[in-house]
Image (cartoon, rainbow, N blue to C red; front, side, top):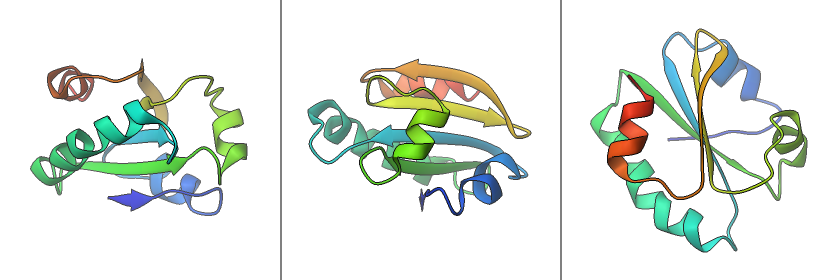
Length: 101
């Protein structure tokens, strides 16, 4: 799991050589806290194949604005540096895994 910030986002996500899922979240968000163990499981199960990162929308406001994050949690999937999939709100593990296909 990679903590993503304005400083490392382009390098870690847009220039990544593998599929990358980004979780936009905040400490105060109940659904985000519920999604955290699901994201952790996906990160563990796809290690080496899929990169998983998290963006705290309270500390990295610029990234949230850049991707027009209006509700959290929001999950963005990047393939070859391009936004490929998007899911808003608490998702089941199955739904998140399906975004990676």
